Length: 508
Image (cartoon, rainbow, N blue to C red; front, side):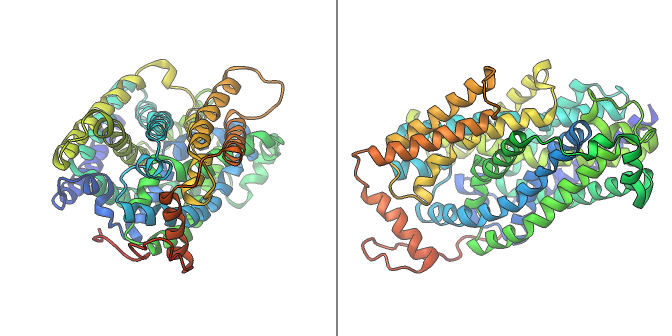
C-alpha cells in the first residue's frame, strides 16, 4: 500500500496545480459562448502550440501507441509521419477557418457549414457525427488513465475509482474555467508529460543496453524490427490521424480560438518537432524495447497498453507515480477541449438553433456548463462497461474514421466553390454508411473502413456537385472571394470585404 499512498499524494499535488490554474483562468471569464468555448478568440502562439500539442499527446501516446509498437513492431512508425502532414493542414485550412470564424463570428463547425450551404440539415449531421467521432477518443482518456492507476498500484486503486477520479476532476475544471482554463492547463500539462515521456524513453534505452539496445533486440525478437508490409493499415492510420485531427470539432475550434493566422503559422512550424519526433519516436523506443527480457515484468500482448505502469510498479514506484500523473495529464489535456466542443455542438447546433432560438447569450453559456457536466457523467458511465475497455488505438481509430467522413463536405467552404449543398449532405451520410458496412462485414477487398468511407464520400461530393443544377449562391461567392482577398491579396471587388486578415481578440 506504500506505493499506492505515494501515488495518491503525488496525484493530489498534481491535480491541485491544475485546479489552481483553472481558478486563476476563470477570473478572466465572461458569460459568453465566445469566451467559454473559444477563450475570446485570443490565444497567443505559446499557448496555441501547447494546447494543440496537448490534444495530440493523450493516453493514445503514453499507453496506446506504446502497446501498438509492442504488438505490431515497426510498421506503426507511420504514426510519426502524420504530424508533419497535419502541420501543413494547420496552415492550409486553419487560416481559412480562422478567417471565416472571425468574419462571421462562428462558434462551431456547423455554424460555418450551414452558413455556406444554406441547409440546416448539414449543421445537424456535422454536429451528430462530430460528437460521435469524439466519443471513442474521450473514452480512451478516461479508461486509459483509470487502468494506469490500477496497474501501478497493483489494484489497490480499483479501475472504477480511477474512472470516477478522472470524470469528477475533468468535469469540475472544464465547467469552472472553460476554453481559457483548458488552454492554460494544457500549456502546463504539455510541458510536463512531454518531458516525462522523453525521460521514460531514455530510461528504457538505458535499461535495454544503451546504444546497443536495438542490436540486443535483434537477437531476442528480430521480427518486430521488420515491416509487416501492412500498407492498408498505414493508409488507414495516415488518413485517420492526418485528416481527422484538423476536422474534429475540438481542433476546428482551436483554429477559431487563435488570436491571428500568424499564431497558426507558428503552431504549424513547431508541430512536426514537438508532436512527431517527441511523441512518436519515444513511443516507438518504449514499446519495442519492452521486449527486452526482464525489463517489464509480467507484460503480455493482452496488457501491453499498460507497459509504462507495469515497468514502474516494479522498478521505481515513486517515479512511477509521477509518470501516472503525466498519463493523467495527457488524458485531461485531451478530454477537456473535447468535452467543451461536444457541449458547444449540443447547445449551439441543436438546442439554441432548433429548440430554443431565443436563448440569451448568458443562458447559452450556463446551459453549456451544465451540458459539460452531463456529458462527463455519460462518459464515466460508459467507461465502466467492459466493451469500452479494449485496446486504446483501435478505439481511437474508430473515432478518427467517423470524423474523416466530414472532410469532403468541408472542402466546399474552404477550397472548392463548386461544391453543392445536397452533394455535401449526402457525401457525409454515404461516407458514414460505407464505414459501418466495411467495419461490420468481411469485405472481399483489404481496405480499412475509414479509407473506404472517405473515397466514396469524395466521389459523392464531386460527382453530385458537377451534376447538380444548383446555382452557386451569393454567400458562397462571398466566402471564396473573401478568402482569396485575405489570403492572397487578390481583388474580389464583387463582394464587400468586411474584414482583412489581421489580428483580432485579446491575447491569453
